Image (cartoon, rainbow, N blue to C red; front, side, top):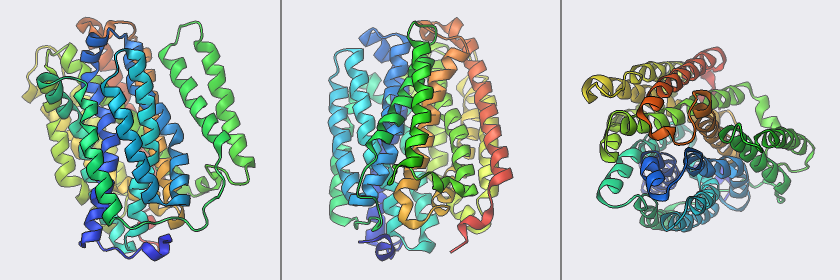
Length: 466
């Protein structure tokens, strides 16, 4: 079934609800594992005797493979069917989660997390492309808003779920819980979600491009995390050469993984640049806040997870409204105000220390941050997809997801180095407290830059043009 033939599903129908449910569950798995690990890092470090660099790799190994292969995942979905590749990715992700759950050493856990990212790269672009390909045009903004709101809850619930499992079970269950969720996702997708694909998709796959993208991101991450080590300068050179090689291969390939011409659309390029800035800040804020609450403020894993509950509630009740608002007035204002409000919340979170209460030092900041996130997420996603042709929904979704994950990956890799953290200092309250404030100040600057960029580059007509 082509994208044009499938674009008849309506939002309130059984099929429409099934498409959203499968997409939310699938993408929610990847979002959950992108954040749930943060609250477990301190416990994992103690249990497996891991260094800060190894803990960064537990977080970033997943993001490296996810970000670098997600474009290939989008291309595979466009060619073989978005539902089919989505189901394959979900099964792969579940198998890798099992390996994470039984890992005996940090090195095994890092390898399993990299494999998790491969599964995520297969299912993530399909989750959004299924919505774009299946729903009627006028229902897409609301459907994407529902997907954004419900899916983002998984990211926000990550610290809460992680805290519960760590305090009352074991950190390994943050991975093992993915198995039953994956089963439900596969059942819904196979029985109720219509298949869509791009009838003009490439029949060849750009493996050199995928390998170069992986090498570029992996080498960059290694250079940032291991900076000062003997191999870091060589990794930096490999990163630069691989990135240049990727661009050259994509420009010359007959059927590239990433058709660079898609960036000729100003709105598409601007929205993805804004995504890089905002999601870099989002990933770093969640990473540093969770460790600050446990290392400096003395919170248990569960208490640190519960601290983010207001952000979850904002996403649950307001993210879909953000999609409806952008459909009515255009995306420019929500995409400008959202990051600016998040920046304000980040500055408030700098108050978190070893003396203040939750109600005065954590709640105001995390609530303001959640309000900005809810305002921004759905308009951003809808704008990226609307700026690309429907038949390229998979690759457009892949690009945006890759940019978002790369932003988080690079921020989590670079900021500890930039603020002077290393070795075992993540467990030292005095050392971590000062680094935390410097990191959040940098995050606020990234968010403010994202808001300004949106105001200067995004045009409202992108969501109203046919």
